[in-house]
View 1: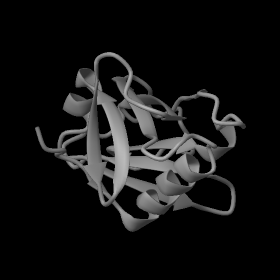
View 2: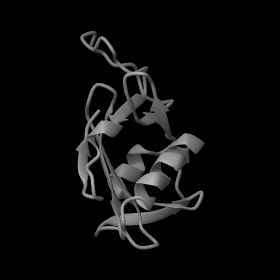
View 3: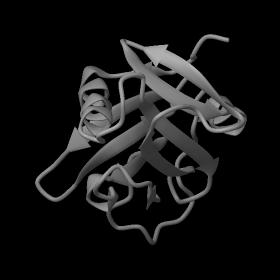
Length: 134
């Protein structure tokens, strides 16, 4: 099964750095778990990993290895994964052209419809998994 999502060059650079500086051996990749939830439609966790965990499938995109479980693959169908950086935050953004706008009006700094942002500041040190939520 081919990956049906797109990594922007900025996301490729970010993911490559996470894996390269993780201290893991050659062949390591990024384990990415995406689940429904949050105002923008996604809750996510990611960490560098030596190999796919049970239930994950390995994908190679532009020379990078991503390890995705079935639910994540379904949620990422047609999505563009980007890395965005502003003066106040930075992180991965998941841009889904089919995602409806958020129905709540309480989020003052809500992401545009279909965009989930995962903060870089929440990444653990030393290659340990970090929980990141949007």
